[in-house]
Length: 320
Image 1 (cartoon, rainbow, N blue to C red):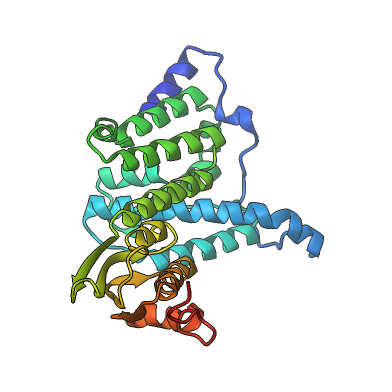
Image 2 (image 1 turned 120 degrees about the horizontal axis):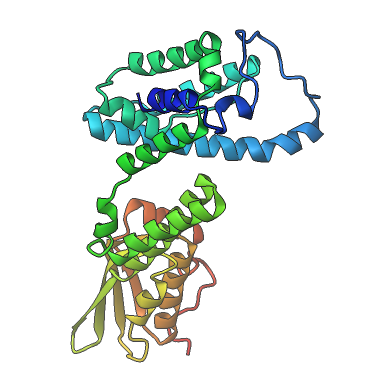
């Protein structure tokens, strides 16, 4: 209604405004099937592959975000895999008739659901009506002022923006706020949703690794007047937590028997296995008989494959 009213006012008063028709010609007929007229060579593939991958990534990201938002609004689950397959098939079909690729749009989808749309028929009707406007009412579409479309998009942005997220910045964990701000700034600065999501994912991974690394705990228990020592290890051992893992061992003591109990720990990578090797070999080098117990199946598999402390040639007890 807003677009129709603003178009009528601009036409009635003869306002000199830029219109949709000024941007180019609208199609006057249905498209026909035709394969893209491009040379099928490796050089062509090298040119289009980076752009196609970037566009596919952005399209899938926005479609999945849209699906999640619509799921939350309607309290109904959706099959994300089917949505991705359908989007890919639709884009291939569009290319075969000379059309452009596309994806789900958050703004339009939110307006659709807010207006009462719940099924796929609402999306089909929107697309069919747009096709009707272009093919039948093209003369009217041409005189629509661009200012009217911009005004509608501004109102859509205001209506769909999560204003509460701004006030939540002070209540949310600092890491979450930093990730959100970095993602938004990257998207705005680069005009690339994929880069923004990539920055957000990388920052989230860094913050998560730092948080998990701080949860590693090693408890030392002594018996037989200090001649037997047991280290109870708890937490996730990986590249970010190996330093705190090694720091928990007392390599200056001279126990005769050392047991490293790993029943409450999990080893994730080569750095973790290397840290275990270092701890065992240092303790053995100071004359202790070291036993490693409690490894879960996944950790034991990694130790069997990559650890060297239990292999032939490892330092023997008594070496200083």
